[in-house]
Every structure is written in structure tokens, then in C-alpha cells.
Length: 143
Image (cartoon, rainbow, N blue to C red):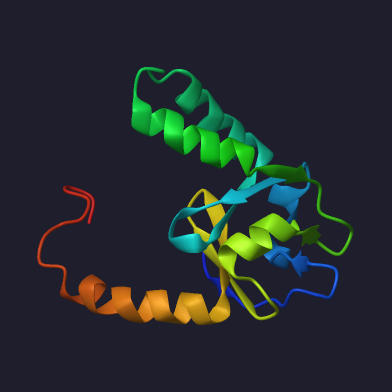
């Protein structure tokens, strides 16, 4: 489970340091791909395999699944972090997420997300009010 908010910077080569506390989970490799709201998803290889299997067994007749699958897999890159825990964010993904220098890496349960720092602040500001005012259970029976 990935938790917390981290604030690494992209270097001039497009590399980003993943949080040190999760390096063991990323040691076998990661898959970086486009996520919703113009962030990037970073999955450990095993978790991306689980997602892949779930999508593989879903009906191919579902257009929304085909559309999502095409974008997810076409934009995916696999990589093994270097000794310092750095990954290289490919230029196309940096452009998609608007990444320049200041980034935010958040834990999002089974994956991490990489955001442009300003985009994350804007997103968080727009969501915190709704989060604090939620009058119905988002996950019935859980929260």
C-alpha cells in the first residue's frame, strides 16, 4: 500500500527519485503510464500484472474498456529504478502530465501518482472541500 505525499524534482534528464521507503517494492521494476486528471500512474510490476489480467478477462465487446485499454497500454513504459531509486519519465509522459521541475508523488493505495506540483495543488484545493463535506458514504460499509 502506497501512502503519503512526496515532493521530488525532475532533473535535467527527466529523472525522478521515488520515495526511499518504497524502493523494495519497486526493485523488480515499475510501469509508468498515463493516469486520470493528467497525472501519471506508477505501478510495481506485479500490480500492473494484476490490472492487466483483470482487463484481459473483461469482455472485449465493451467499447469503454477498449478505449481505456488502448490509451493505458500504448502510453506505458516499463523500467527498473537505478541504485538511487530514480526512474526516467519519458518525454511524452512528461508532456501529458505537464511535468517540468517541481513534482508531487502521492501514494494512491496500489500505485503511486506523479503530478505537476501546481496541478496537484489545484486539484487538491478543488477536492478537499467535497472530501470534508461528504454527507454520504463513499464506500458503503467501509467508511
